[in-house]
Length: 159
Image (tube, rainbow, N blue to C red):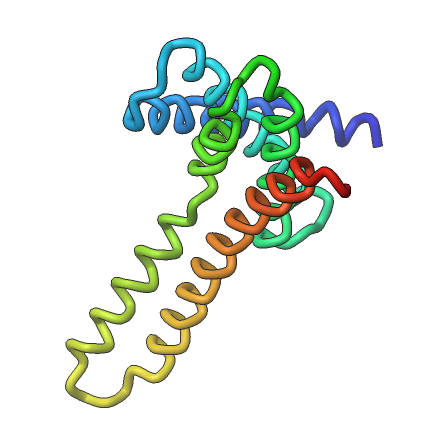
């Protein structure tokens, strides 16, 4: 068990590093200030690290993304003292690297190939494209739910 963990550390560090870079890029794109940009970077690293650990433990991509979004949102809300009112925006920027662009591209290219097919033999391509699109919707929904649930529960006075 310990050897597996040590062997997985370089891959985990790789995922966290590139999650941090991607979140920082989105933070720049959204005009976050310098201090908030550092928090975006940390949120991106945290999100990809949680998702990677979850997937390595056998959880599906969609469920791992949900867990990562919940974890990132909880940490951002609990760190509100340092983050200020931008905590939800920082959590969102940290989760943006998990948006499934490859699946979306696969779905769109597949749908275009089906539309261009005149032979009528594209049922397999249509099914593959629909599956990719369903994964996109599921992952984006998991990110949204993972960000919204802690924001609602941790701010509620009754909870």
